[in-house]
Image (cartoon, rainbow, N blue to C red; front, side):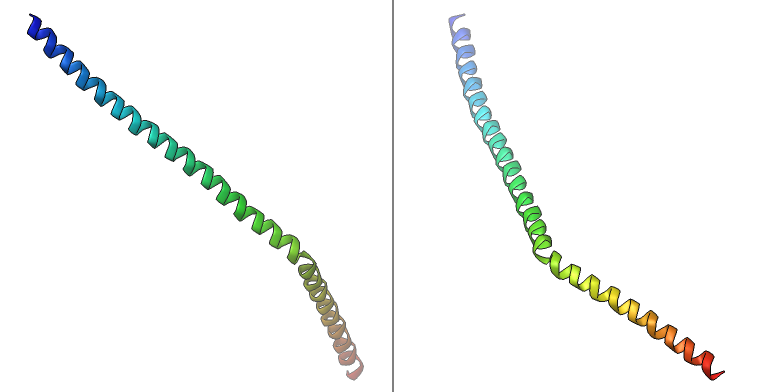
Length: 91
């Protein structure tokens, strides 16, 4: 009877050490997951910051480009109107 208790106690100690080992492994996995989430958030903040900064920096140039495009369209329409007027005069 005493030997059975000793076997049970030794088995319980083995199980306890395995549980501690598994707990340490789970804690390390959880820590790695938290670090991965943190770095992912930092990565997206950097990506969005660079995107926003680039847009703010390039906005004046984009506005100039759009104005130039609008002027080109208006000149093309004026030229088209002049050509139509000349065609009417020649007929």
